[in-house]
Length: 225
Length: 225
DNA sequence: CGATCAATTGAGCCGTCTCAATTTGGGTGG
DNA sequence: CCACCCAAATTGAGACGGCTCAATTGATCG
Image (cartoon, rainbow over all chains, first blue to last red):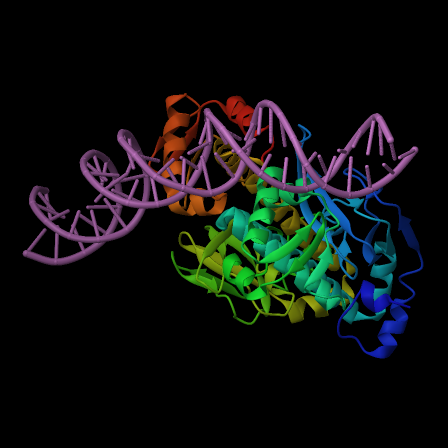
């Protein structure tokens, strides 16, 4: 079982097997469907087993802001732990599968396994850092740097999953990328065209081939947040 | 003792008194000094007792992004829990005092007090939400909306501490506000002048008097993130 | 094979930045 | 206590990046 995927990192083998107790349930999410909506009660967090999921805030006026594109092995739902009510939407970008980590079960299990607490704390800290990196991108980078950093970040995470860092398929639209990066879809499209013209990458709709990784890194400010 | 300030929220009285065990140490921070720097080992998180503290990221090229202005009762240092190494700087905006919440002691104590775990989880979730709100502001709002939202947020938090929501002193410079909001200091200054000209507020250097809260709220998009 | 949605590309405008000059306020030492 | 100095804030003029609006092309899916 892939519980290492769902709650990864350094635990001894026996502990990992205990963890399987946590993950009894799976949920299949067809493309476009929601794992949870704003306002839903938070009774679990979720680890992505396959596919990809976007999370987005929505304010009272209906304005939307995408806060993340999550890949297999990553956790979502931790923003709902403040009042046990989700404050965001989680929507599958493609057919996906998640495993359910129920909070009550985790609390129960963590009494016997203190490492689980610390592990979960690390995961929440990681989410804080992820969000801070996005703040940095939105606050300090110009449009071309944002898109370059976005591509590098995706590339890096896909490589960690065993995929090629050079060729991959974007699972989100130009509009979603733009929303995430604080740009319009037109600006994103223009930047892709420009990057291709300058020989940094090849792009055919949503298929990306990175041709000059070092140049892309230089452009982004050598940071892949 | 003000441990409620340091780890606030719903615990029974006896638990609160147990919490005092956690908070043995205090640190005084003169204005301008750092509580921790990027790269420092994370052995504790900190609750602000008095004063105010900014947290800022710094990338490899020295580019800085302020991610928060923290007030009494708020917690900082949780971004360092991923690898037990701080990834940000925390610098006092004025003479401040924090209490130290050592992680090893918290882990020890939480074995006897499961509510502590959940409380801490809530605090980390709150930090995630805070950061997401900032992402929303940077990604979706225009400059005037960002500054209005910033002022409303400050006002709201100061009110929660028992201060007037209408009159307060900014503890940070125009440059720091601009950095936080993804704007230049000149833009921030111009916006303050404009808000004053339009009768929304009165501003004298760093002293703010909000004159028309509803208008400010309307401007911000009625969200105070 | 047509209908529909996503993506590209262009033209012009607006908001924010940059650069620069002043003004204001606070702190220090004579 | 006043004069000076330096940092912070204000204000203006002009440039530029990214947005808006609009037209066109290219995919995808009944």
